[in-house]
Length: 228
Length: 62
Image (cartoon, rainbow over all chains, first blue to last red):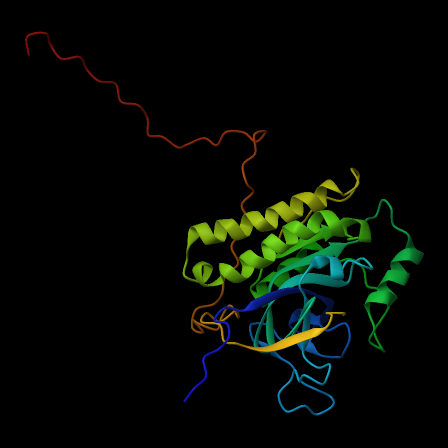
């Protein structure tokens, strides 16, 4: 007798990656542990404590994602970090503000570029050290250029968008649109894969609405957005 | 990353693989270029039309 799954569609949540690179191009890595998210293959959680099938209830292992974008923007997001909506499936521990999952793969990525007009090197460095809690990581890299973002999109086969540096003040206005995008990313996944144009349009509009709000908060002299 | 208090454990098995190449490994995944949404300020798109044919008037006694 087999047990029916609780859900037949992936859960979706928001999380952060570091933008690293290897011989094949840009790669997403975890900001907490030294592990890479492989391209075009589901990332499977592993546990350093030896859990048989992460995530375990009594452990902190698993692939993390939050329900709302507010949780991630409490400190701000800067260049070198990639914000994204990720699919989660397999064994999933549900929490009040997010999930820990067994498997994951990004669905859409947003790469912040430094806001040059109001750039403060000291503030950026403090933010970088706050976000990256992994020892042995180099100082904050230069903001990704157009070619890097396009290479990232091709490698992972997901859309990548450039956004300005996300500060804490942005969290409230964009959270509602981020939730719409997160829901659409999960609910329309099957239809988009089957070639449903309306599902693709709904997803694209959810992304555009979020980008519009972010661009309106960008200073007038800031660099133009780069769409990959 | 803080995700709050744990609630329950779910078993999630998506019908459609969230990995782009998961369902059709032989077909490479494609990323569609983002088409900007038309706005009231954007110019009207020109629809390609064939050249108009001039109709020759028929004789009155035809």
